Amino acid sequence: MKLAALFSGGKDSTFALCKAMEEGHEIKYLVTIFPERQDSWMFHFPCVELTKLQADALGIKQITGKTRGEKEKELDCLKEILSKLKDIDGVVSGALASNYQKKRIDKICKELGLESIVPLWYRDQEEILREECSIFDVMITAVAAEGFDANWLGRRIDETAIADLKKLKEKFGINIAAEGGEFETFVLDAPIFKKKIEIKSFEKKWDNKTNSGYIEVKSVRLIKK
Image (cartoon, rainbow, N blue to C red):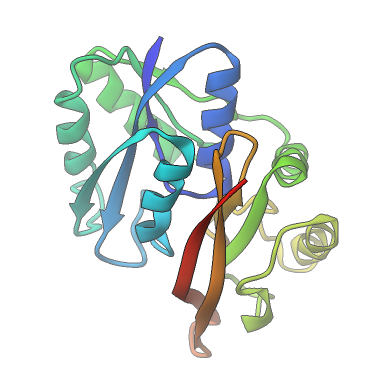
């Protein structure tokens, strides 16, 4: 099938894209929604502006839209964009276990006569995280849960980081795959990328009151592989 991929630049949307391609689907477009507020219910906020570099690295056309991030209303932008894509058969997304997210994407697809494809749905989340980080270069771009601190910002997710995430899960009950919004990620390199992304410098933005923060990228470039 010809698909549009809902793409935030994070580990799960990238992995879902990989899986769809492995299954023989053609990815016609990357669809990225830019929320105007950090606490969007549906859409990724940190470093979303850098997805244009990932689109370049993938060689896939990106279509973007903006939303105010208001609950329910923020889906109108997504539906409007998808309704204009007359050459697709379905939509692939990286939902893991969020019924809130999946139900709303399924509803839009049904209304538009599109197939909703969710390759990662209800798979073992630790297994997915390990598989993602064995083939991707993944950076944590934001954290927002008890147990995290500013040292997590900009950290790569590797086996050591996964072990630390498991400790936070045991102590604070976080979702190890961040399905509850505990952290956000950005993929710097993947097997399907024709180029890789190098973040040369960034600034950490931390709020002690909310025990949350994100990175603001100052210098970044694409590198040939």
